[in-house]
Image (cartoon, rainbow, N blue to C red; front, side, top):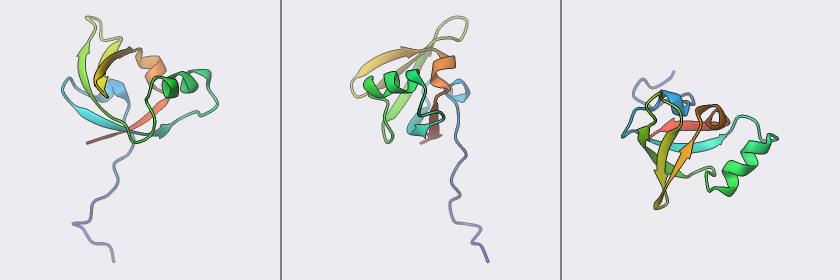
Length: 87
């Protein structure tokens, strides 16, 4: 019998679903073979890294995130390679 008070893992979210000021953690990548996945890794977006959404461009793309003491603007299409969870 399952415990209704136990925490269920939240399904992965996309960067486009996060509001300004929200925090998230990288849990993995949707496509580990994609070239852009390697670029995200080199930029420091590795599993376990936590970040906050700081702002969006006027038309909503790109999105600026802040982690490890610096800001990064990332296109939503490229950020789709990230599997995230809200924190």
